[in-house]
Image 1: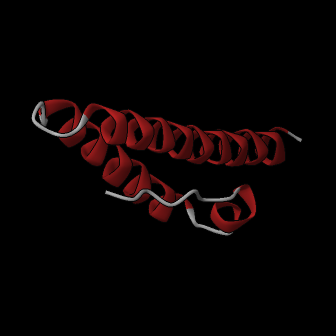
Image 2 (image 1 turned 45 degrees about the vertical axis):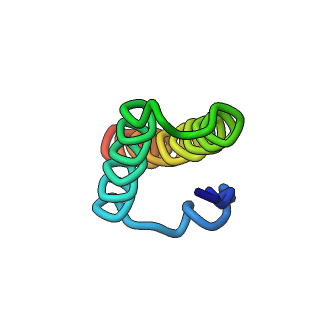
Length: 75
């Protein structure tokens, strides 16, 4: 399984609903990989690392958008 790296700029344009959907997809893929004990260890570790990084990027953008919305309301 080849996991492609996503960029901050790419996901920054997503709406909140799309970010939540994408986060769910990444979490599901990561859970499936953890459960697949028969996959080659090297490929599995590389893919897990890429998925975790992509998930971290999505959560960073999601949290930044939440903070920005809170600041607009509070200002």
